[in-house]
Structure formats: C-alpha cells, structure tokens
Amino acid sequence: MLTGMKLFSLVDLVLAVILLPSVTSHFFLGGTMSFEPVDFEPGDEFILSDILWKFRFRAAWNRSDEYNFCNQSIISSQVLLGDSHPENAFYCEDCEYDSELALGTAQYICSSYSKEEDWSAGENVFYVNFSSSNPVIYHYDCCWISGLLTYDEDYGLLYDRYYALLATFASMSAFRPDTGTVNASPVSAVIPLMRLRTGCEYSIRIHIEDPDGDLTRCRLAEESECEDGCVGKYGLNFTLLQQSPCVINFQPLEAIQGLHPVSLMIGDFGSDDQLLSYVSLAFVVDVVHGVGSHCTAYVAFEKSTVADGTCIGIEPNATFETTIYVKEEPCSSVIDIVLSAPVGVNRSDIIGQSPHKEMTIMWKPEPYQYGYNLLCFQASDDYAMYTEQRCITLVAGAAAFETVPQSASFNGSDAVPLSTASFTIEFDNDVFLPSVSRNITMSKTHLSDVLLDSLEVLVAFDTSVSELVNTTGRVLTFVLPVGIQLEQSTYYSIEIGFGAVVSKRPCSGGGVPFPGLDNWKFKTSI
Image 1 (cartoon, rainbow, N blue to C red):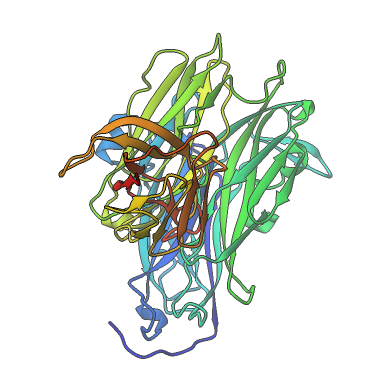
Image 2: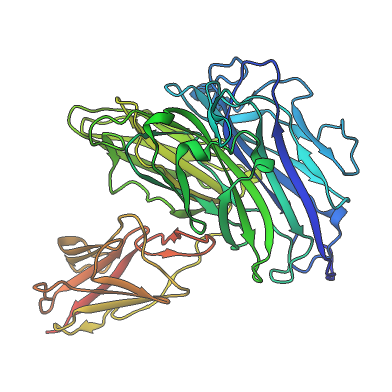
C-alpha cells in the first residue's frame, strides 16, 4: 500500500471503441464499455503510471456468424467467441504504447443469446497502465446489423449504414478530493434488440449504476461519438424524456418500420457537478406494424419476479439465484426469456403449466467480476413481442450483510399489553422497504423452551405495498390491521422474511435484502 496523498489536476483520458466496415459476415447489435481503477485505495499516493485500469466491454453480434454462434454449452464452457485473428484487438493512440501493440483481445465470452432474434452477447476485460494523459483506446471492426435504417435530415431514410462507434470518453480526474480516490465510470446494460409497434407509446428506462455513487445523466450521442449509429433518432421519432434517471420515450411511426440504431452517452458528475466521464450504450430497435391494442407482449412478469432497479449484494464465494415468473394470457405462450448478463450466468429451462411459467437464474461470480454487474431480462411471446425490460444490479464480492436488528419494541419474556397495535424494530443502519414482494408474518404459537411452533398465521404484510408498514431511518414499524386484536396469555412469533427490508449499502439504488429474522417472540398479558 502506498502512503501519503498528492493532488493532481484533471487528466483527459479518451477511450474509444471504433467499428469500421470490412469484408465480413458478422454484424454488430450494440454494446457498452466501462472502466475502473484496480487496487487504488483512499490515502494511496497518486502516480498515474502506477494505476492499473480494468476495462470491461459487453457487445452483441449476429449469432448466425460462425465466429459468434452461442448456446448454453458454450456459455458453460466460457470459450472465447469472435474472430481469433491477432488483429481483432484493442489498440492505443496518443500514448506511450506502440500503436500496433495489442492491449487486449476484442474476443468475448458469451453470456447470453437469442435463437429467434439471431444474436449472441457477452463480455470480456483487459487491463492497462497509462503514463500519458490523452490515450485513445480503440477497436476497428464492422458492421452494424444488415438492413439497418437511419434517417438524415437532408437525404431522408438511409439503408445499411456501416460505421459504428462504441466509446468510453473520460475526462478523468486523476485524483478526486471529494472521494479520496480516482474515478470509476458508470456501468450500464441493455437487451441488444427491442421490438416496438407502430402507433404505440413506450417509455424505456435505461438502468445505470455508478460505483462511486455519483450522479449520472444520459443524453443522445453526437455524430462524433457514434457515427451512423446515432442519426436514427429522427426516423424513430423519440425524445430523451429524462436525463436522470435515464428514460427514453418512443412513439414509432408507420413509415419507419425496420431496424434502427440507438446510441446514448452516459456521464457521471462529481460533488461540484463536474463531468468526470462518459460511457456509451448502443442497441437496436425493431419497429413493426402495430396489430390490435397490444403494445407489449401477451405475456407479463408476475409480481414475485425481482423488480426492475433492484440491487443485490453477493458475498464472496456465494451463489446468487432468482426465479423469473411469467404469466401467459389466453391463447399465448412464452417463447423465451432473453438475458443481457455477466459471464458465467446459468439459466434453467422454462418450466411450468400454462398460464404460469418460470425460469431460474444462477450465478457464482469469479473474483475478477467483483464489483457492479448488471443483469437485464425480457420475456417474448409467440407473437414475437416482448415484455418490458427489467434490469437489476448485482454487487459481486460485497461484504457480508451488516444490517442487524438492535432492539425490538417487545421481545423475549416481555408481557405485551392486549391493546398493542404497533410494533417496531431498530437496525444498526438505515433500512428501506423493498420494491419486490416480501413478507412480515405474525403467528400464534405453542410454548416451548426450545422453539415456538406456529399454530395459526394471524396476519401477513407485503412490505413492498402495505400501507401498514413503514421505515424511518433505522426503525421499521408495522401496525395491526383494524379488526385484528391480540388475545390474552397467548404466545406470538413474528417472522421478518428475507428481503422484507433492504439496506442501501453497497448499492446506490434498490437495496441489499435483509437476510431475515424468525425468533422475535413474545407473550401477551393476562
């Protein structure tokens, strides 16, 4: 560990992934890139050349290409996809490296795919040291997906545009006095291809996390940042509804049916509202003719599916698991549940009896994946339409959950008055209500020196929606419903279920779920 602290002025660092046309059969469907310092802690002396930077990219290509074919077996084997030629790599300009020296391969490890939409997507990382202040990291390749439509104000609709630019531009603060460390860029992800119907209105939230907890904003990319991948905004008839959080409003027109590129720039801002970095996010929108009144799929996520924007910490060596539940409307079927996922995520088959289907996702992060990882998912139906996209944040390698109960309003041998209607429990840090359905249950019980076996459930609260449950700072409070009253000389047990409250640590949104409490017990007075 280096000691001491030295302040440096801003260092301009430009990181770009540039894709240019060549003779090829593989086609680009979007992606993103981010960076973060490795093993730099507050209090370390800042020396630019001593900092190791980790670059992570996620990209999607057509699955029908021989270099990009992916299935579940390939995901499990974690083999590299993409052209294996040594020149398929990232390079650097305006830095101390030879411009022909490869910094890292542009091949990727597949983590998700879609048979119906013909895409494979995955991630990879590479590590770089810099001593120059203005390096440009780039990768030349080709092309946007065949049949892409863009719109030019002078020339109208254009077809098969090739140039694409996937970039991370960072005016990176060499040292940040507000955090005592150096900056890490925002992290974002999206399903590579979204299908929208003409005559419908859509608002799509772009999920963003910032490892430093910085304010993030998004904007439409300019031509110098995305080449032909950004001028589609005119033909798509969309507007940036919000910058923070990032929401795009689409109202596709009948005349522009087909594939369109969408390119955004996502920036993070320090405590003085100074721009620290921009990362790009690109994906494809497929506009199809609207039929009937449905603007989304004839299937929908059920309430028990993890909510969009949820943030979950995963302890070192632990495995994350969640189940996606989908309900089918009459005369419709779930065809697939597609993912945009970190490397190593495994999925089960879709099982269940109509109208209820489900699929389980499991992930045990590797040490190099510790930090912020985004997982997005959509379900598709037999009309080739999709549900809304949901994205969650998985903080791999997060410390053990530290929020623990400190005291309760009634506990152990306390004789609780029969008139009691309100219960509180205080934790060691601030807690919040979850965005997905979780429960607190109160039951009448048998008396035992060892345990209290449940006799009868008196009341159950869904903490995500119940008006009888609230949190204020460290305190959780819930109130018995009207008509529910305690009985004299009776033993009760309260169970706070997994995730019934959440902590904001270490996530900037959503929350890490409380692991649960099942031994809160008491007896009423005579």
